[in-house]
Every structure is written in C-alpha cells, then in structure tokens.
Image (cartoon, rainbow, N blue to C red; front, side, top):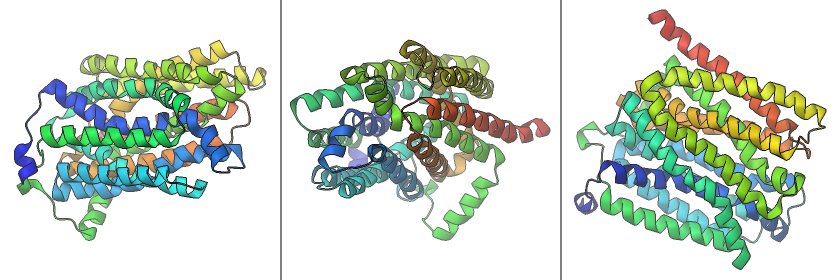
Length: 405
C-alpha cells in the first residue's frame, strides 16, 4: 500500500519515456550482447560457432514462458507488483550469468533474464492498454517504440565499448545496474492503473477458459500469428547479424555502426507511424507493409542467389534499411490490432499475444540462424516466406471483418 501511495502520476511525455525504458531493457539485453558472442563462446568452450546464437534465442524462450506467467498475475495482483517481480527475476538471471563457468550455466542465466524481462515487457503494454484504446493506443505505442529504438541503435556500440575496457561479465553488471535505476523510477513515479474492483482472481481454470476465449476471437488470434511470423524473421536477423557483418563481410569493429543504422530505420518508421496511423488506420498500413516485405525480399533473394549468397554490402544494407522501415510500421500496429478486442482481459490478452508470438519467433529465428551457411540466403528467404505467411494470415483474420461489415 505504501508504494502505491508514494507513486505520483507522471505526465504524458514522462509516461512514454518510462514505459519505453522498461520495454527497452529487453532490447538492451539482446543487442548489447551481440559483440560479446565470440568472446563468450571462446571463454565457455562452445565448439559449434552457430551455437553461440543460443545466447539470444534462449532469452526469447524465457520471455515467451514469462509472459504467460506475468500477464495473468498482473490481472490478479496489479501492474506495479508484477513489473517489480519481473525485475527481481531479471536481476537474479544477471547474477547467474556473471558467475557462469560453463555455457550451460550461461544459458540458464539468460533464460532467467528472459523470464524476468517478460514481466516489465508484457505488463507495460497492459498498463498502456488500461489508459488508451484503438488508434490512441497505437499512437502511444509508436512513440514508445521510437524512444525504445534508441537502445538497439546504440546497444551494440555500448557492448563493444565495455569490451574495450573489460570482459563480457561487465555487460551483465551493466544490465543489473540499469535495472535498479529503472525500478526506482517506476516505483516512485508510476501509480497502479488496475483498480482493485477490476482485478481477476488468479485461477488455472479461469486462465484456461480465457485462453480458449481469446483463441476463438479470430481477429486477435490472426494478428498474433502474424506478429509471430514477422518477429520470427527479425529474431533470425538478430541471431545471425553478428556472423553476417563481423565474419562474412569482415566489418569487425564497424558492426555496431551498421547494426545501429539499420535499427534507426525501424525507429524512424515507428515515429512516422504515430502520424500515419491517425490518417490511414492500422490495417491498411499493416497490409501495405507486409506486401512490401514480400515484394522486396523475393527479387532480392534471386539477386543474392546470383551473387552466390554474398551480394555487395551496400546493396544488402540498402535492402535491409527499406525492409526494416516496414518492420517499424508493423511492430506498433500489429500489437495494437491484436489487443484491440481484449480490453476486458488486457493482462492475459497481452500475455497470450506476447507468449504465442514470441514462441513462434524463437522457432523460426532458430531455424533461420541454424541455417546460416556463410551466405545471406537463409535470412532473405526467411524474410520472404515469413512475410508471405504473415500477409496471408492477416487476410484470414480480416476476412471475418469483411463479412460482418
């Protein structure tokens, strides 16, 4: 009770920044690790070079399971306690990774980090849903994503900078310190948004019934599956980007620069989407973005095939810049579209959407990353095929809307 009383209601700008930083913990925990993957693999005795990518995918697996835990928990005990509990688990995972003496122990620590980060990540979306609806929610989430994207732009460079003065253990120490700072800010400034009379008693029977209810809502399910396909392609990029740029194209210390430039394309699109969505709507923008991803990736795959999987770097970067612009359009809109009919169970809805889409992304991301063969062909094929799958799924989801209208 005391913590709820002490919290003050932040203004709109502070709210957006705070939520963005909470969600950014996930991006930082992924992207700042990328330059350290070779050093972690060498220090912990990883034999197969592609196995180092599990440092990324295991984090996502923990997130997928954590979202199903923290979402319903937030509907039962409130948003604030759930977010604080998630940060506690995340901190435990950081300590575990710092002390890791083997690659298996590292993966356990990363799983705990993902499990804990799921609390702040998924409950923050429900917290936004408590206060905004429809296009206004999409607008808020676009602003959040715009602030959030600054972290992926600079995170690899931050990780690289840490490696210049220390080893990879200090990257996890940095995660821990930043988590403490964000927790204190959140605890002091953000009040509870879920009134006690609107809370739902936690019950596994009720949880199962609500999951069935959500799965019967074609719109929510369809957009969730679409997110899974698109995010799966992006996880494949995250997992293999270090090998593509540092090893295949031999960029070495320039890798953070290229990664940041590509991430900035997503941020710019998210910022622009905050205006576009108010004029054109979420669905038309999302359909256009998905179509663009397909029509860009198919011919580029053929071109990359002609180049034996090693197209010129400048053309690859140009392709990814345009592609990630459309990803930026999709990230904010698809989540808002999936959440739109679930206001009465926002916590569980956010959890199920996040969990299903993240589990799908882990599966597709691992397939793309494991298929890496010193060429960009698996990655580009993944973009083309998963983009097409997302477009078809979105059309299926909206077919019922067309019939009803």
